[in-house]
Image (tube, rainbow, N blue to C red; front, side, top):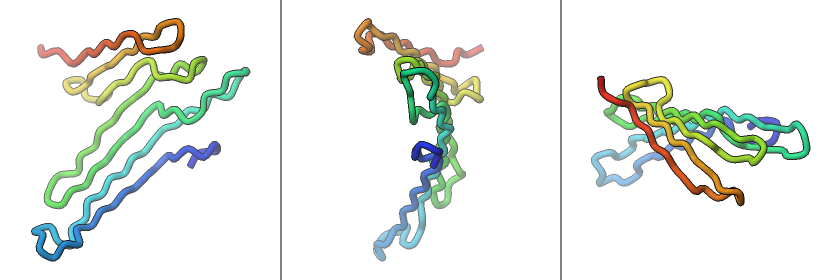
Length: 117
């Protein structure tokens, strides 16, 4: 937890307890790690918005899979303005940009993926 009580790491483990299952006693594990930036200057605070989330999944008999999502936070309005999937892998990177109307409602979404060379 960070100093405001936001979870920075959450681990979930599931065990197959069905004796008739081919996966009996095997475990699945997910670890979600958040980089939280809390904006506390001025009169409009913005707490608990992750700027990076990394999910690591472990499945029996499969390679470990890690996914990363970065967010750009508009601290004045406490909202995400962009979301970047797989920011460090150019061929997998997808950037979603959110536009807002004067009331703060999402009024446009632009999704841009990697282009092939």
